[in-house]
Length: 312
Image 1 (tube, rainbow, N blue to C red):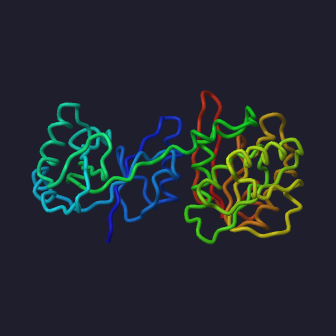
Image 2 (cartoon, helix red, strand yellow):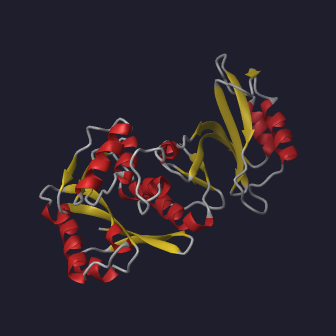
């Protein structure tokens, strides 16, 4: 079975979201600053993944990695080798600058080929994890969500692009053949992140000005073909595999309990899997609507706390 090692990173306020996203994508949270599993995804999908190492071999000692790397066939490609720091404390993971350079020379010096530290054809990396050394080719993650901060229409209470991207991954960990919807899409932050990952998603919005903003933002990033309809989510008649529902109304006014229940009942009718983002305790309403909460976390920004609930 192929193995992949991912370097992960998150701040303290988003660590719960990182773990929840990892459980959805990989079935495991990982340890320290890394995650080893048999699932291959583009590291650019997640704001918490720095890179992926496609593991070629492993050894108990670094000298074993150096010996095995001597048998690599690069077919004339230039290369560089990186000693990867997963940030873990203790025997796994963390090395200072001098240690890294010495280890890179020890391994890279055994590879037959031409080293090119600036613009190599191929990049290899090795990391110590779980008491052993792993070596493989690196795939770097691209922080696509950062570009999405530069959108023409913005709203102060919208999800950040980082949080929106992670929430989409929790709702749709396997995009193939999945139809999703954001039925309270606002200015389209979730829609842009989903579309940039190739996810088939529709938007719906009750506020005409917000819907116009969503269409403008989508068009700005080349996703003008995304369907954004105007109307109440309780009037949706189509069915979807997944829905992402942020409840932004709660930031300005408190929704009546009956309206919250109606919204969740409608979501239960049109989507099989729903991720709720809320600043209120809606567990009771989710249960009354027929949902089971499968996973959850909180995301903080200063004193402001959102809950993320995975419901099925």
